[in-house]
Length: 454
Image 1: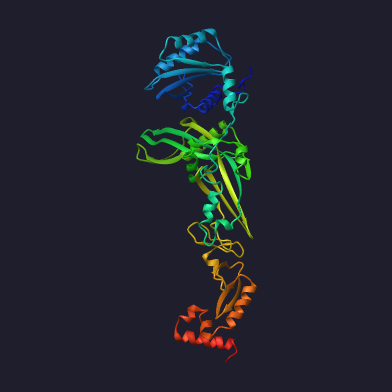
Image 2: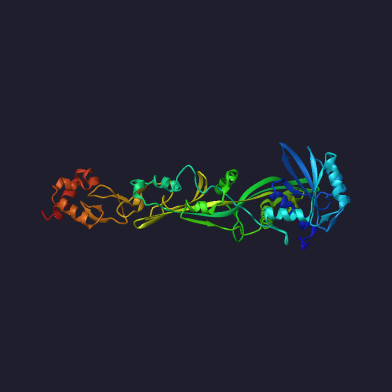
């Protein structure tokens, strides 16, 4: 049977480690390869509230006999674990009848250290379940779980409607329905332990005992670690995933796109180990026995890093696009039910400058549909409503610039202004009219000159 033929024994152990991690076992790690004493992979399971250790012997060979099973039974008995223990023998081939009989007898006699046997046929069934490519030992990512793309207790457009509520001078009824799309982006949540002690003749100079958890985008190309806010969104909602049903979500969103995982689980594990090696590498300064100061670069080995879990899931990236008059307002965020992390906010942003952010004040211009900051928002002189500087028609009256929706309004105010008495004209520039007597007199004189009276 041509199963995993191209892998070495150590590579086979790598594959089996990933297999059991995918099957839901905890704290899956490999024993020391230099002296494994029959224990290739060690892991744990919780049954009825009791944590149990499992010691796995991996045999990349055609036939496994009784001596292998007996040796593992002895290794289980000597394994240091405070709790019940059992064993497994996993092979790409088959077990002899004496090996099977020995394992069966342990079960029948209620031995405290029973042993389960998994042969090549069992591996094929497991492969179908977790996406294992038996011909090259690569664990393909099979995932149909996603974080919720929207809050089921609210409308799908609730997030963008909430954002528009922060804008002054606009009502929800004034806005068209946004175009809503969702892209299901694959990510992996990685949990790994790094345990290593660096010693010299003077003793321990550096120690690493760290559990790291991070989330990475898992599409084509090199994995990219997400920022802290997105990672928190993912890890805090992994318990609340739903089935990725594109047809169902197509009834909610205008467009639905599902990206594929770009690499295998084995490749993500190798990338995670390399990343943690770099992350934990540190140059340590210490003083030797001869009172000389030394610098030593402490870099963990790959065997010092144990990837405990690689959890694949889809992260919904939701994008709402609202087209209103002359402008388009995008609003994009990563979603997990009612929780979300904004990626792009084109609503809290002035269309005329770089001012952005939810702490600013923005006003809607009904004349052109612009959302503008305070520096680009004015009051229309004739109607007293808001208008932005981008569309306003302007003219100076009483030495002050006035803003109008259009030429028609400007002409109407010209006629109104011409009929005003001087003191009312002066009030068109309240800063001067409310200032000193000299400034007011100068303003009135200026108005008389403009009017051709003097």
